[in-house]
Amino acid sequence: MTGLSAVLFDRDGTLVADVPYNGDPGRVRPLPGAAEAVALARSHGLATGVVSNQSGIGRGLLTVGQVLAVNARADELLGGLDTWVFCPHAPDAGCACRKPRPGLVRAAAARL
Image (cartoon, rainbow, N blue to C red):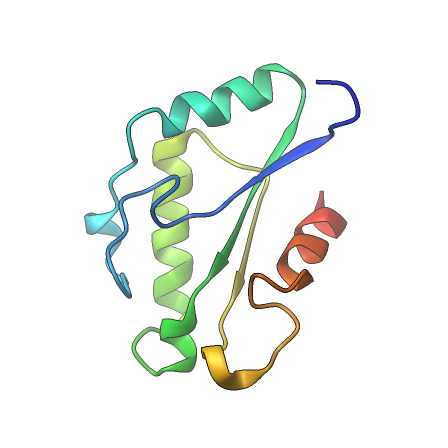
C-alpha cells in the first residue's frame, strides 16, 4: 500500500446500515465486513476516517448532538477510527463541504 497514508470511508451504507436520518445510536448496525475493513487498514499502518453528508441537520430532522451520538456508537462498534467529519448542510445550501465537493475530504486530511 505504498503512497497511501489514510483511508476515508462513508458512513451510511458503507460502514453501517443506512437508516435514513438516524439520530438513535441504538439503531446503528455495522455492515458485514466493515469492522474488518477498518482493522485491515489500520494493520497496514493507515489512518482511518469517516466523511459523511448529514443533510438531516440542515433539514431540521436531526441535531448535531444526535449525529455525534450515532457516530460515537458506530466508532465503538467498528473498533475506533481516527477522525469523523460530516457536512450538516441541506443539499441546496451550496456549501463547499458536501460530497462530492472536496471539503469533507480536505477537513479529514487536515485532521489526520
